[in-house]
Image (cartoon, rainbow over all chains, first blue to last red; front, side, top):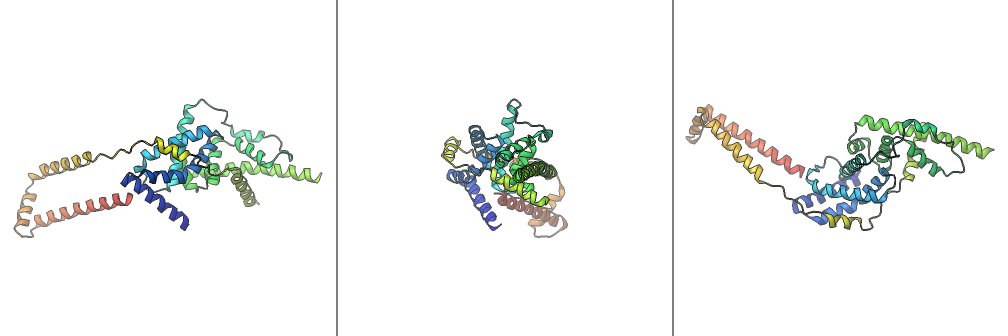
Length: 191
Length: 107
């Protein structure tokens, strides 16, 4: 908690240095502090397309530079950046023709029978891909990026209740799948 | 049981996330593409202030209360119009101070 408050103060002072003194070095520090997580966020959103994710991350930081005077410190700087990055992702996503990444919510039912021989991590990755785009996005922000439900709602511009629903539903689907995987693994071990 | 499953799923989700991407020259590339910062233009604000004051003066110049209040104030007499005028000035000063403090906080 104290660490988070100290981090927020550092961010605020760096932002103030940019705004009041036009200090590019202060902005560079902000980029260095958050580029890793913003790029990781975009890589997940773009299903591992590193080049496209880096292009969008660059676009997001340039937008943050232009709009820095709109950062009022109501959210954490990182959360504000995630929101910009997510908007950039949405804009590029809307420009693209519909991709195979969109998966019907019912498709999770059609997952192939999990096999003990297959690595759990690989199976889990595949199961994750079967979740709806909204569920994947919410789980990415809430669990993997470590945002609270409120922060995720801000980043994704979604009502808080919708975020909670997607998180619960996504976990429930994974839970069902994981239980099936455990049963198969136990059966294989005992036979 | 359910809580345990939730925990297991969260652990798997975190494991499956690669974490922050190493910089590898990314920040330098961003900094090279950074355009010069445009300063916010101040003249529209000051033009608005001047126009507002002029409009205020024009609309109040014909009001007898202002003249009487000002005359009494200058004569050192605390009449009702003078007190009204003083209260109006104090109120506007308070509003301006509150606005300045809020703006300073936001920065």
